[in-house]
Image (cartoon, rainbow, N blue to C red; front, side, top):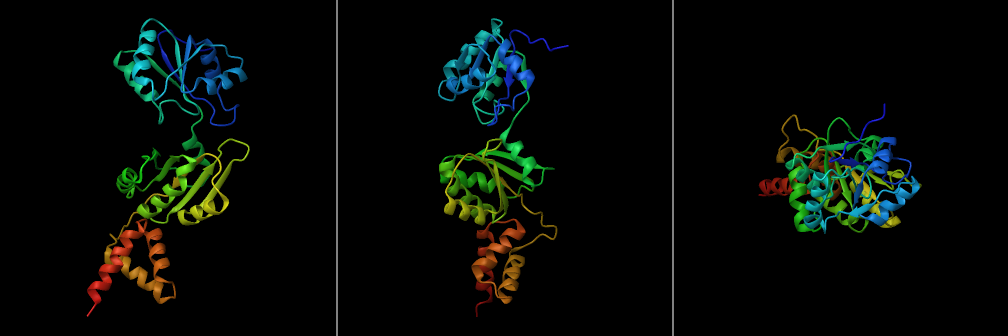
Length: 285
């Protein structure tokens, strides 16, 4: 028997992240039966509604009007409106103001019902070949380098796969900063997920960044970065310096040796570089 959608309930409807067919029967029926659909960009959402012949009225709800519009939507819910909330793509309330509306609804004892579906971070993760047993969703980093660095420092010891979202115009700078803070770790760039030119770029962060610089940045990306490698033996500065010396003795130049040790140990190049400097200073006559 089909589910009976309830009046006075906030429904969180996942929408496609690219391929228009990636929407559930339940979500289509919810959008069709709702009294009102709250959307980030009503023009974008109307394309989806048109594809499925849905004529439900829409209203805008986004970061710039949430303070005013949120309470209005809550009042409609209290009056018995069946409200469907959608984002431009994927799960609502993930990196968008939908989370604020959910909190307001809960505070007013309004039922909140999620309708699961497409999500860019998890879609990229399961096809990436990265560790899926433990992962951390970081989402969008702050817009400025000054504020990004503390966030990256705070997650550098996480051992699970790290999932980032990033705008195309910032991705090269962000990749460089991730490499500097976390080390030249294994990573995967998931480009244009579920779309015609879907692509997975795999390799060390430095290699991926160089490739993008040469080919140009095109499309939307999810960035997956390997977590830190647990150091069971409690690696110290002396260990890092010793590993660098071993590589240099085999013919590897100093800069590359530092990069390699940082990648193997899951630490930033800066940590290894400082260890080498300290070692060189202590061995000076």
